[in-house]
Image (cartoon, rainbow, N blue to C red; front, top):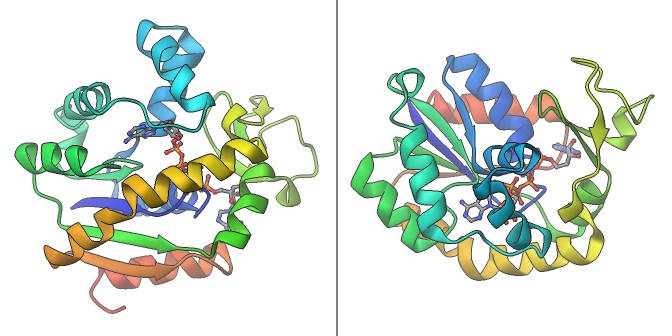
Length: 209
Ligand code: AP5
């Protein structure tokens, strides 16, 4: 199964993608996680990407298409994959169409007023990339899953979050129509309990939602 999650920053794409990919035993391919891993390594790609990410802007299409194009050719992605955060522009969607064909796109919809709260309270593990909200954590510094260090993403500062939401509306939201026109987009409300949302997504994927 070849899947993609689209939705505004903070909609819960990463949270849900981790669970759904595990259920179907397919790799969860997150462009944001891949870029942050490169930033932590201090690679040429990571250094170049950081200046865009820290300002809440998109990394250039050619860089992202090359990175994801290579990733989905790896052996573990041949049985399917779940893309999270890619494609994010019309040019990226068109480039993906030339490489492969998606089976379904899940549009995770959450009203704007919840998104800022979610992102400014997010903590991410620097070791396993697990994501939490401070309201779920008793210890704000240590990952409950692997013991790694939790950190606040630089791009989760409120002013950057507001810029990211603007960029989403301008560059990524038009993809909802693009995939609706292809007949493969399904909407899922991303507010409410995390388990309930997972169940809704699984029902949609199994044709019962
Ligand atoms: P990326 O990492 O992809 O960020 P994003 O799309 O902005 O999405 P987020 O990771 O912010 O949110 P999410 O929807 O995954 O939510 P999460 O599950 O974490 O990209 C970062 C940057 O990299 C971009 O700005 C860009 O610069 C660059 N980039 C990446 N891909 C690119 C591309 N294709 N092209 C160009 N540039 C690219 O949840 C958020 C919070 O809410 C967490 O705290 C979580 O615990 C909480 N939460 C989740 N679900 C719920 C719920 N149901 N109720 C309450 N809280 C919840």
